[in-house]
Image 1 (cartoon, one colour):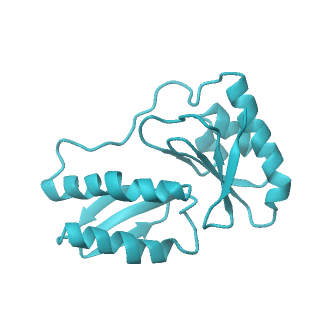
Image 2: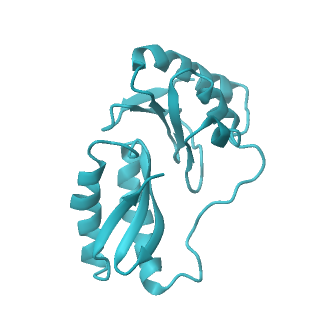
Length: 183
């Protein structure tokens, strides 16, 4: 098994590409070892000293590290944990988990916002090892959560304002501003 790695715009995160689909729908963001208890792979990665976060996308894993440690030290252990997980055919999650999706009760504006996030914005953000998740839309302000490599990335606020906010304001004039909430 060959696992590729890619740098992300966030120097504290690294993207791992195992060459297979991880999640057919949605994403999973683990900010602590307690969160990681839902996934044997995330739990194994969190057992490595210096890991701050684990994020699963459609076909990638983004791992965030604490500032004090270097990737040259962490990378081999992370690659080993990922390889062992897939070679032993373990499940990605223990039991079932619910996925967030478009809700039938969403108003037309919220539905349009979620559809734009899912079809135009999320795929671009995923290329950098992250995700953007709808939180709420109130009084013209869209609240989102940045995950994976986008969480805490130095350039995420520029991306949010210059790219995401401009696109959403163009297609949905009711959106006046986009704000990121802390995950």
